[in-house]
Length: 236
Image (tube, rainbow, N blue to C red; front, side):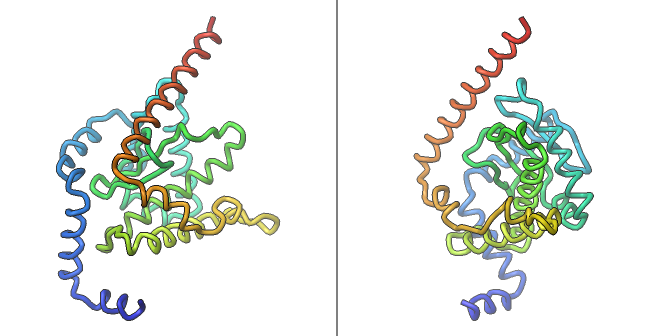
């Protein structure tokens, strides 16, 4: 394994770039085919810009839950205040932070340089500080994916466990800035890396992901309708 890694690192840059782009295009042909349209939609979408990063909310909950934009700004401000180096990485690797219904809490789109989060999955009213730290570490994690892509390393079946382990290690390093002599918050927030947490998404079929996507939107719509009904009752 070490010899193979050394051989890859000794390849000329143009060879690594060529292999990367061929593999990347083959894996992402469908999303790349409509990349220009998706970029245009993000560019015209209503959003708030913080230090060059556009914050966009297109979730079904956007009318009944306004936490996303404000808390995203708070998370970015937190990262910038305690770890400017990692904040600059976020600025380089993430141009858009988009709130939308998804199969995971967060994901990274290299073509758009976007971080997509499903913010309605969490209820931060019980412990706002805890969830702000969690959100900040997530943004560090996703920006690390971008940094790895920028080195022409694709998310292949062989490399993805090592990539996720590295991203987890990086967000844990960031979270260690919250550690105190009494509590190791980095451990409480993130725990130990467990590859099995990713097995469901790695091993799912296209049909399973499609069904899960439909179900996620349906559950989100039901939740949104329930919140709207409660708001109407409260205003009466």
